[in-house]
Amino acid sequence: MMENYICTTCGTQFRESATPPDHCPICEDERQYVDPDGQQWTTLKKLRKNHKIVFQKKESGLYGIGTTPEFGIGQRALLVKSPQGNLLWDCISLIDDATVDLITGLGGVDAIAISHPHYYSAMVEWSRAFGDIPVYLHLRDREWVQRPHENITYWEGSSKQLYDGLTLYNTGGHFAGGTVLHWAYGSGGKGALLSGDILQVVPDRRHVSFMYSYPNHIPLNGETVEEITATIDPLNYERIYGAWWDRNIMKGGKKAVQNSAERYLAAIQ
Image (cartoon, rainbow, N blue to C red):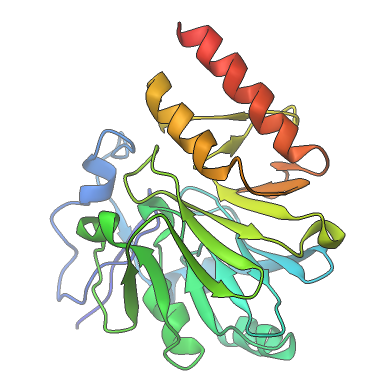
């Protein structure tokens, strides 16, 4: 029987095969890791038996979508509502009929954009569930796609506007194609930055950090951090939404990034 197997460590779904893949290139990369007990696989059908999707409203026009119990890296996606179209930012490995019905009730999803390869997860399943909607990935990370599909659109350059007030910015850093989403109308019009873990919100929720590998504690060099902050410095934003439920900065986000960059650069010098 042919299956699209899913790596249990990073949550990435692979192209269809009769047996599980021999290895997961994403986990074998030094930015991730292979399970100490060895490479393990599951399927969407099995996930649906043991996990469910949960929702949280984060603010007007913004909903978090995650998995319980936690699976893979444990990130949650964000649904951003817009008059021109609704966008799913980042992705998760699980999707089911109930989730499609609930999201359809919120206006559906018109496009998907993902910050970096660790969150590609089941992006093709999500695209197909909402009518073969486009999935926007930066071209510089194309090599990490494990389930190629015609619905994937690779964009190039430093930025791409998707809808009015929703613009992708290629910052690099964690991955060459690392991307953040600027939502100009977030935080009541003050702006919000959806950062995944390209800029990772740390536990105090007043700072972010910059790493080449988070699980393996490999830092970025100072030049790269300066390039990241220079890319987003022209943007106005009050809030930062990271990759996990409680990793958000709800006020003073832009100043937090500036302070965090100064702190980081001082530490590595």
